[in-house]
Image (cartoon, rainbow, N blue to C red; front, top):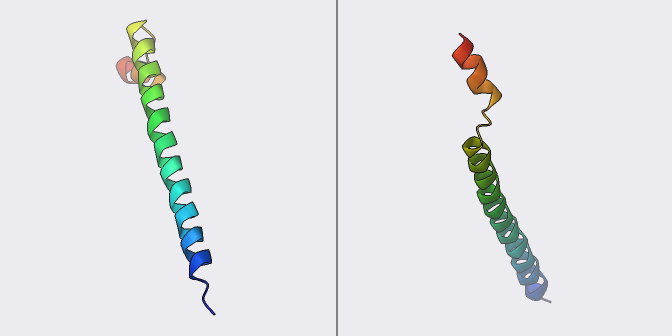
Amino acid sequence: MTHAGYVFAAYGISALVIAGLCLWILIDQAGRKRELKELEERGVRRRSERKASKK
């Protein structure tokens, strides 16, 4: 009795889910970088930069 089909299907589905999550992270990262660039172009600065410049 072999369960190879079940094992291969489980590994395949897991690999697809992990690949999808990685792709989602990369797409989201690109969007966040684009949003930060747009905000910086409009003159909005990060709070950490304001605190550092006051010292």
